[in-house]
Amino acid sequence: MRDRFEDAVLDSETRQLFLRGEEVHLRPKAFQILGLLILNRPKVLSKNEIHEELWPGTFVSDGRSPA
Image (cartoon, rainbow, N blue to C red):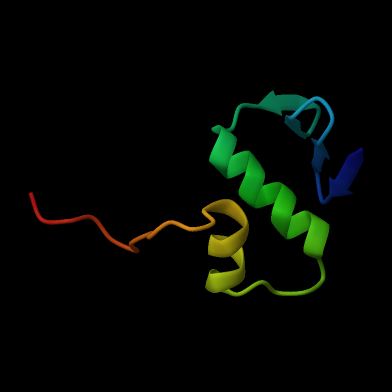
């Protein structure tokens, strides 16, 4: 399925993002986040909703741990 927004097209079947006709490479998790946000628009998703969808059953921290 292709979703258009502004100058971009997200193709969930081929897992490709195009910006002004040029393919933009995204890491898998970035693609998942973008797809999730587009799927749920215009609703705003909370951080918890995103976490539960993309990292179910895991602990995710907002920052880096000290070195």
